[in-house]
Image 1 (cartoon, rainbow, N blue to C red):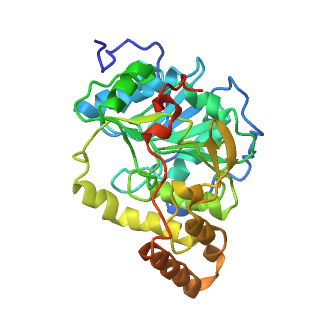
Image 2 (tube, helix red, strand yellow):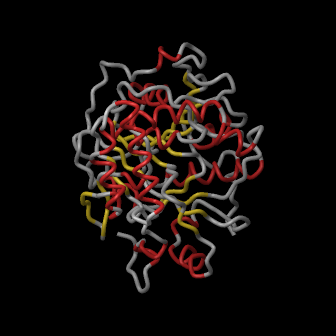
Length: 364
């Protein structure tokens, strides 16, 4: 059995430490990606590498193992993959030295040390090596399907997201196992894999410099993912649902690393600030179901709220009614539709993914 924690020195390369953006300055200083940075991607070529961006938790216990696994899986996707880890969580510098990742110590964030998404993408727009960039939580394992999927996107601006698959608690988890179809299928057959609901996203793919004007959004707190979706929808940027194409594996964890646990993460001050960004889109908090494009049967096509016609109607029309009265009308319409059964949850389940279909071929 492979060791789930990569031993010191097992990864080649030293980590350059950058001190680019001071952590605690005024929010206005980092509310915009630098205006002289333009979007250079006009479609991603197959074989192009990626800059992976993340802000890890302290490297203690199980979290250290999970984060090592995640970084290893990202680096394995392409010989020129770049990983940039943001923040001063204990153990990050040592992990970067082992992996060859870049460590950006000082980054704008809250007094508690939570980084701002806008500060991270502002830094990456200027300093990351690759035009294709991904922000993702530091416990997500990616597989060989990832870059092939991104290569199908041909917009100058886009956001690709997708539902994750939750791995079971207590199951041995290694970066190499994530590539093992037989292991995943065995877990699925015994009911130990779960497709996470569409109200949460853990990876965000976009081209360099796309986030000009994005407001302050706090990573690691509730609704930060919904806020990113809302901002893209407001700016008519294609939002692509890759749930049926990308297998993104989430390693089980609790919330013991946060004082106050789940309550603080999902109901704290920063969450309310993230929700305020979401509400600019209308009365309903946007989720993966509101993506404007999706992969079906391996091909990219338009999405109308995943076939939920009432949600699609609200997305396309009622959301744009201006003012408080308009937003209230959206909320009331949504509530009525829910009570009479005109709305429905995500139609996806694990068997919809190609790898888990009966007698399915390997992932595309």
